[in-house]
Image 1 (cartoon, one colour):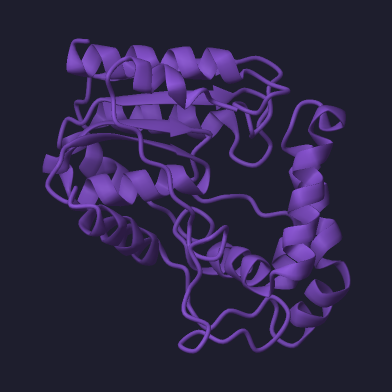
Image 2 (cartoon, helix red, strand yellow):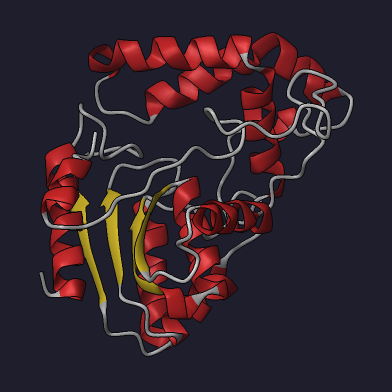
Length: 260
């Protein structure tokens, strides 16, 4: 995984947190009770993710502190949404295989979203489908068995985890619809953007990053850079892919912005 210690060694403060119901940040069980397999009463829209991030910063007293946002996949579209809403507080944006433009969902995901049929499919095949998707998103699954064991346990034992993923796929921009307008706002605000992509990413194809670069040019943003890796999958920063290269790339981007 990315070595955050390298950023800390540069003198940066680094903040990581769990998305709602993806780790230790749980939505209120009383307010949002899980009523069925893969069914979450909260619609995980982009606005929900932006609001959660804002709450985290506010509770830490960092709501007015400028920052560089680095996000992978779903975290990428969060960064885009947050930057579009609070452009004066973001000094730079790192997008790693980031969801933004309309995603091409696999057939299993489309079936899972169907009323009546969807919950049955999810209850029978949900965990295996998630694990198969996760394995297809890495370079060498054999090197990440510990990760997949934890993922399987989370999917089987934490109903909120699986339900939050399904809700995100159904309601968050990029998974459904597009965050192109938010991305354009980032470009219009002249926020420096750095893309890190696996060129063999089947979840968020490299062609989407090429399109984002075209949009940036349309909006007159010159401060856009990239590093991409031939043959690398969606989880490009995992230990079986290019973690060190991703870390160095992020450190270089941060250094350039803050003149470290």
